[in-house]
Image 1 (cartoon, helix red, strand yellow):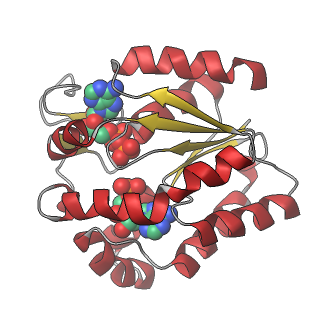
Image 2 (cartoon, helix red, strand yellow):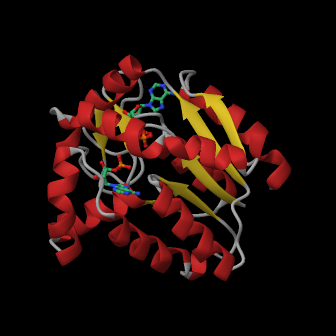
Length: 215
Ligand code: ADP
Ligand code: AMP
């Protein structure tokens, strides 16, 4: 099963991706997590990406296309994958189509999570992250033990780009550069839109219901 999780920042893509990984045993490919790992490790890629990420801007397409091409060619993607945070521009989607044609793994479905802006801001400003990629919320989805990741036991933290003006800029960037992909995938007949405002477990039930025919 080859899936794209689509939606604005804070829509719940990462949260649902983690549940899908456990349920279907296919990997989550979060370009945000890959970039953050590079920033943490101080790689050349991380150093180049950090300035864009801190401002809430998109990292240039050619960087992302390179990352995704390498990642999709890894062995664990053989049985399927969950793309989270990619593609975010039309050139990224076009490049993805070429890569997937080469490896003969077409996208089955694009799940588009809809959440109003006010709620996105509330979610992002209360988000707590773990370096393993797990995502929590101070109020809506707190870790069982305060400050500690349920999944791996590391300390959770607030993302640098979840605090400042970067949040509003990210929503703006989403509308201008990423939202056009809704029409792009609608035209291909593979986009399904979901109400992302329901409780996390209810959204997951909806997701599983939609994916049942591909499993
Ligand atoms: P994205 O990956 O789309 O940016 P996340 O999965 O990181 O979004 O979720 C953003 C924030 O919203 C996190 O703090 C998460 O715990 C919280 N969240 C996710 N889904 C829901 C939901 N259905 N209801 C309430 N809060 C949610
Ligand atoms: P995310 O974790 O998906 O919210 O991404 C965090 C940040 O990483 C974004 O605000 C961008 O700066 C960068 N990023 C992640 N994925 C992409 C992408 N597909 N294209 C460009 N930039 C990206």
